[in-house]
Image (cartoon, rainbow, N blue to C red; front, side, top):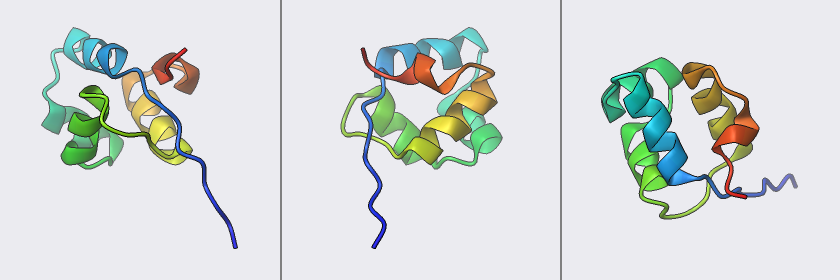
Length: 71
């Protein structure tokens, strides 16, 4: 059985990167393939995310996945 670890996202940084591109949550959802509710939860720092989700968001935002993680 495979288990995936949830990682904590820096919600403020995610939001700033999105807003810097003048994107709404729906824009990032469309470009990343990540549901808008998931993005909203991450930006409001309510829960963690799977590494694959982080990779999708980072790719859409053209940043390294580690830039989205909490320190």
